[in-house]
Image 1 (tube, rainbow, N blue to C red):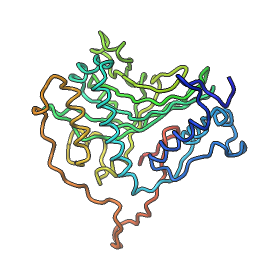
Image 2 (cartoon, rainbow, N blue to C red):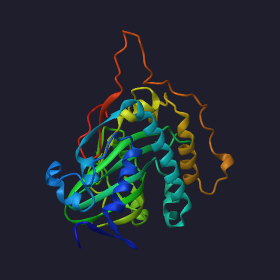
Image 3 (cartoon, helix red, strand yellow):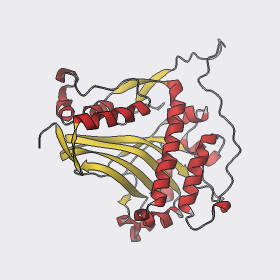
Image 4 (cartoon, rainbow, N blue to C red):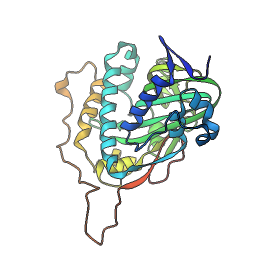
Length: 319
């Protein structure tokens, strides 16, 4: 297999087909610029092999920090919530995921990763953004809280894969770990792949994972992946500096953009119930514009910039 060509089901995958897809994804996530796959080798050093395999964009994004406008974080967060609702509707409509439907009815929370990118040639990396929504006592679903997920690997692997992933949080232990700053799947919490784990393991496993994928990737697994709170997304989405626990348990913040996701989760967890029984969504109330200019000298200056810590690198405490 030539380094420049990867095997993709039904057609060969070349740089010319992979690069535009990845550029669109990262542009959608608010990157101000993306590395060019044709950038001279000296600019990438150790990542040359991945670049030659058509994966330089993923590698650069996984290992670097790109500045992004802080004011755009709110739009990114809203887009992520909308994508999560759409992803969940696919899983809810596809009978291949029927084992997940009944389990969702007893799940304590659901984590949705609308777009996870996995790529590698010997060295590999994966990551994406995620939202978690938890069950309330009255059967309704909470406002979402935001995460980044990522992992790195080394070994026999070659290819690229784009996946949509849904994680069902089945235990209180799993919930408590997810409400902390960082959780490692398969270590801090137990993990099983659905529908294999949807049998007897469903009662004892902390998290059950279901995914839809396009592409080819040797050694695909969520074991060892790290979920990290994206506090900057929470702050932008709610115009308040709130933790996942405050969002889930206190319910003091609200964004009307969450309604579609809340309804999608309710329909998944109540497949046999008429839509008329869905709990009412809280009254719409637009969050304040956190990034509106201010001339008040007592307020800290906001230049609109911050480090956009991506999934392949350590994420700071304010992310």
